[in-house]
Image (cartoon, rainbow, N blue to C red; front, side, top):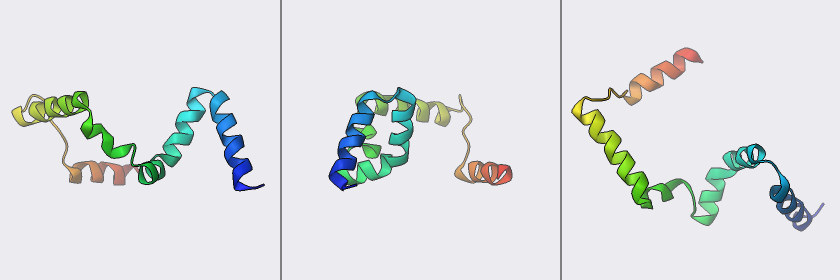
Length: 82
């Protein structure tokens, strides 16, 4: 099958696939999509609502209202579960 035929089938499939499958496919390809199109992973920081939420969360951690975890703590927890 040619790449062109595969593209056509993928386009057709994505138009009719259920949301769960579309999200799963996107999750597999998200980084590559962002690399190729410049859309995706880093774009959240251009969204004022996202930045506002991140600032709110950072303020809560800095004030002690919410306890966060260091990268080392998270890494150790993940390694213990593996």
